[in-house]
Amino acid sequence: MSDKKKHSIHTIQKMKANGDKVAWLTAYDYPTAEFAEAADLDMLLVGDSLGMCVYGYEGTVPVTMDQCIVHCEAVRRAAPNTFVMGDMPFMSYQVSDEDAVRDAGRFLKEAGVDALKLEGGKRIISRIKAILDAGIVVCGHIGLTPQSSGQLGGHKAQGRTIASARALIEDALAIEDAGAQMLLLEAVPPEVAGFITKKLSIPVFGIGAGPETDGQLIIVSDIIGQFQAFTPKFVKKYANVAQVVTDAMKAYVSEVRGGVFPADEHCYHMLKAEIGDFPALTKEFE
Image (tube, rainbow, N blue to C red; front, side, top):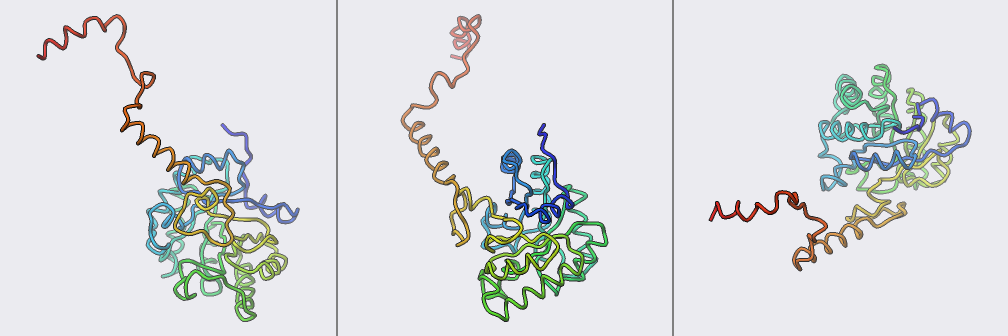
C-alpha cells in the first residue's frame, strides 16, 4: 500500500497560499489511475472527455451519468490516496437544483469521489450553491466549456477580447462568491488567467490557460500520445504511446503469421511423469 498522504480541499488551498503548484491529470480507468498515483499526482479528474478519449464520440455531450460513475469507481479503486474529482456530464445538472444535487450525490455514494466539477459561470450559480449545501466540494469551470461549445461557435479559446475577458472575470468572481472551493479555466489567455488567479482567494487551475495559475490540468491521453484525432495547441507530448502500442501489435502479427510466436518458452508442457502415457491416450481417439 502506498504511503502517500492524500490531499484534502484544505491542503490544496494551502498549496495556493504557499505558492506551490498543483499537478493533475485526467484518468478514466484503473491502470492509468494506478500509474498516476505512483507518479505522485496531486489530483485526478475523471473528465467527461472520456467521451472522446474512451468511447470515440465527437464531443462530450453524449456522455451519461452511468458512464461517469463507472469510470470514477475504477479510478477511485486504483488511486485511493489521490484526490479524485468527478465531472458532471451534460444534462446532469442543467434542468434543476434538485437534479443537480441528486446526480452529484451519486458521484459520492457510488464512486467515492472527493469533489465535483461543473461547467458554467453566473448562469449555474444556483446549482453550485445547491450542491455545496449538500456538503459536496465544488470546482467551477469556465472559459472553453465543451458541453456548451455550440454556443461558443466551436472549441475556441475564450477571453481574447476585452468584452470576453470581462465576462470571464465576472463569472470567476460569481463562482467564488457562491462558495465554490476551486476554479478551472480552459483555453484562456495567460493575461486573463493570471489576473483571475491573483484576484480569487480560491485555487485557480488552468488547462491551456498559461503558467500563472495555481496549477495545471491536462488530458492524460494527450500528454502520453494516445489520443490521435487532434492535439490542442496547449498540449506538450511527453510520450508517444500510440506508436509504441502500434509497433508492438505489428510485431505480434508478424510473429504469429511467421510461426515465430509462441515459442517453446511460452508453452505449458505435460508433467514429465505423464508425458510417456500420452501416445496411448491419443490412440483411444483414433
